[in-house]
Length: 84
Image (tube, rainbow, N blue to C red; front, side, top):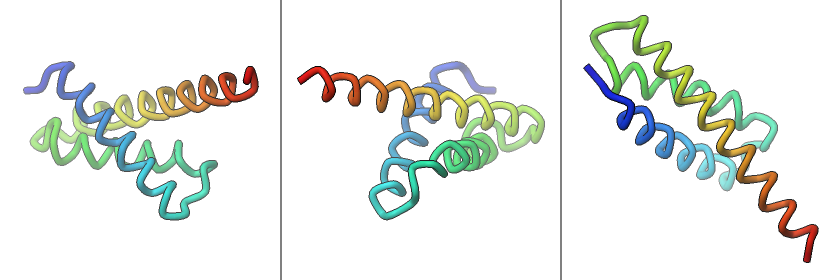
């Protein structure tokens, strides 16, 4: 079984991978979909490979959390740049 630190760890990994894909030319408007797909893959491979339902739900949580953190970080950095 997994715990919430696994979800937090995988959220960071998914965010790093999506940032890498963005730097390789993936359009930023596709990052949320990419986060969701990467999250589901992470759930299937790492979090709960034996239980498909739990793995997919965990992956969705990981992907949506990654998208929220990505969006929040982007909005904060844009706000800081506008205030300069």
